[in-house]
Amino acid sequence: MRKRFAIALAALIGLAFTFAGSAQTFSKLQFESRVVWKEQFAGFGGLSALELADNGRDFLALTDRMILLQGRLSRENGRISGVELLRHEPLKLPKGMTLKARHRDSEGLALRPDGTLFVSTERLNQVWRYDRAFGAAKQLPQHPDFRTFYGNAGMEALAIDRRGQIYTVPESSPKNRDGLPLYRLTSKGWQILFFIAPVDGFDPVAADFGPDGKFYLLERKFSGIGFRSQLRRFDLGAFDPVGERLLTTAVGRHDNLEGLSVWRDDTGQIRLTMVADDNFKFFQTSEIVEYVLTEPKAQSAVKPLAKMVASL
Image (cartoon, rainbow, N blue to C red; front, side, top):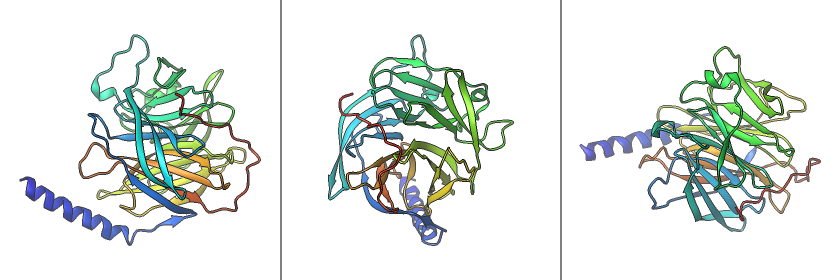
């Protein structure tokens, strides 16, 4: 039985890559590097979020089973060449909370320059605050919409702007909403800033603010035989609901990309580093991939605040 399954799986993967060659693709980004990430400890996999420091090496990553990882990327000529795991621990829950295994679905990660960390949970549709990465959790207020999110299509994307404000986008449009709401947490609670238009059946899975001050959204689409990824960029000061499409990949080009970190390297180029969720399946891959934005190198008028994760 196992042998027949392996043969069928191999045929399916081959079919996926056949389609990958003919699927419509688009890119304003230049592919730079890819590395497969493997660890031996129980619970590794399901990588759903990534926060990379401005040095392009130190990072925090999150699994969708609530394990927080701290590590460091090695590079050769700027390209990612390896991954070193420095620490991993289960996330602490807010005081007094207990969770069944099926509700332990952490998806989004956002880091303030002062080390304050925020995590979004999909099935609970909550955002938790950590004053330090491996410390105690505090649950933040909720928006009424959060209770209307679909079970496995709730809070995925989480991002912080240069002023320290938190944003989130659900994986699918909530009930009674036309489009994908972009929520921002203010002193008065969560407010809807805009509605992002869904495009070609792609669903949001991660977000980040780039050093250019713009909002980057990573989306994915499952075709039945593999995943496609899409990246869009939005100027929240002159909002267009469709945004600017930067990348659309073919089926099988990458695995299930779910985490995104946008930063500027020492040469002035904007880099987009992403991590893939293997869904804890032996035939999928935990990978880290990186692209460079192919625009003229120029320092942004919006001065970014440095992200530091090495000392957490």
